Figure 1 (tube, protein in one colour):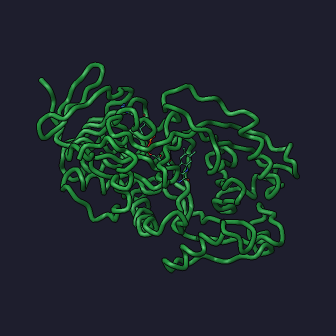
Figure 2 (figure 1 turned 135 degrees about the horizontal axis):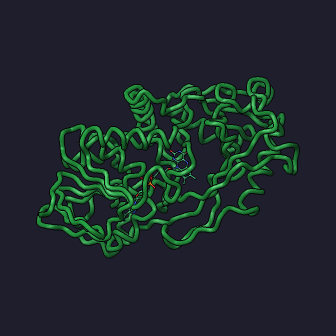
Figure 3 (figure 1 turned 90 degrees about the horizontal axis):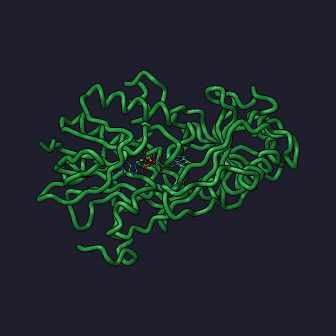
Length: 389
Ligand SMILES: Cc1cc2nc3c(=O)[nH]c(=O)nc-3n(C[C@H](O)[C@H](O)[C@H](O)COP(=O)(O)OP(=O)(O)OC[C@H]3O[C@@H](n4cnc5c(N)ncnc54)[C@H](O)[C@@H]3O)c2cc1C
């Protein structure tokens, strides 16, 4: 006999985990499938930590969502008795008056966010890890910080099991098809029926929803960890999350003895499919990161050109980008019982609990008060010309 659920979810990584949690907490039955065992490093959530920030030059619509998400992370941390959001603060550094800092400042002005303006001397005094030149400046956001990715997903899955959700791991969904008002979901050894179906398959979304020709690009990104020459300057409590304009290099204070994590938001090679073999990180990935680090953080990486820093680890991770780098959260245009959330474009993790609420709302109520109007699929309909409406 085929089991039936109120909601089935494909992809129990970042967004699927929090959508499932929200669904089951509202009393509906849920089954979630994942092709791996999250947290893992094959998709988009690998690499231990993610930045949480509220000033958002990428778009005004994200600011209220980030503020609400911050409260949700704080509440979840208390509930799970595990700190998930570390409000270490975030320091943006760059040449005074240039667009990199200007976009952050403008977002803060429009949304009346309190950011501290620091000149180069103040940055060096307060955060000696960062030896920026005199013509640079800093913007410090005291409510920003970073999220513990592994703890977040592990805690969500643990809670799901306690609440009776079915979480089926190491089991890819192979096919799905509409079944009357519901959906059939098929794996290698099982078929289930669900009233609603949520797609949170991250970098694998394009192929499994191929009928939509979604404008998604999968990009290989590299994340590194370095052992600083002076570790105490990069300790939690002493150093915030930080960023520099060169390729948007960003980094995190030392956590769990793993060194200082550094990565670049810009750059990276596009790959045809999430499941394709991915080149392991090499010098062409790591050298530019090391060079920028040594320019501004000699006590991490040694003086330029940055030969001294000891690389502890380097992994790859996948961005799933939309053309405008805004997310897609919407109903399937041809099947109202199917909801999709994809294209989180390298900045989605911070919103996961709020996306969970939005997805549960769409699945169980058919609408949501979460302000996701600007994330609708309709903005790409011209490009996805074979969508049936
Ligand atoms: C290097 C890097 C740095 C980032 N930094 C930040 C940051 O600082 N701040 C921030 O907010 N965001 C950041 N992001 C973005 C954020 O991590 C992603 O937006 C988010 O993790 C996307 O979540 P997801 O649920 O779409 O994908 P995932 O978390 O990858 O989940 C998708 C899941 O679907 C599963 N799946 C796929 N196909 C199937 C199938 N057929 N059957 C079953 N399961 C399937 C996969 O195994 C996977 O577990 C970063 C991303 C990367 C790669």
